[in-house]
Length: 239
Image 1 (cartoon, rainbow, N blue to C red):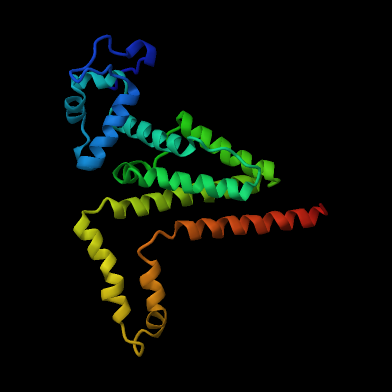
Image 2 (cartoon, rainbow, N blue to C red):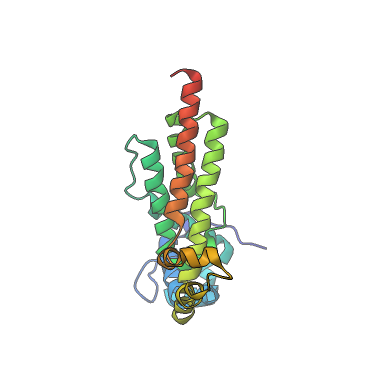
């Protein structure tokens, strides 16, 4: 049975860990991010985390119900980092593009953590703040609620899906990632025009683009579509 999680101000250790730091939820999450970066997802266990923190592993259950609960906290911290310093400028399209790029970048800064968390719904403070922010930008721009929710859904799922896809590539061993990147030049660029005319015709463009993330282009396509819809709505209403 899962142990009850105690409020932060009640569960903070009175004595520092062996490393001299006072245990806290933030310290645990930061240490978990470092472990994921250094050892991958398989390296994140309660026992190893306790060792890295210089604390008894059982102490972690005063902060999290288990590794899955910690995973949700990690995902929420990544979203929080995307929101840091972001301010709406009053141009809904530019604001959403900036926010999308920030979310994507925050996850790619921790690719192993992104693979682990991008598909999760945390229900935590930063995630809720991000959802409120995106919906607010869309509703304030003039989108009806049903359209605002539809665009929000596409926007956030697209951002996280590309974050997971691109992070999975970055999380590969270096040799495997480089081998994948060489395929476009070593294989696709050499296909003959008589058997693969369309690939052969576009081969230089494929080589130039396919090893980069398609997220910026996909994000622009989504926002362009939303902008066209908003213009149509305004034309219909006569405004």
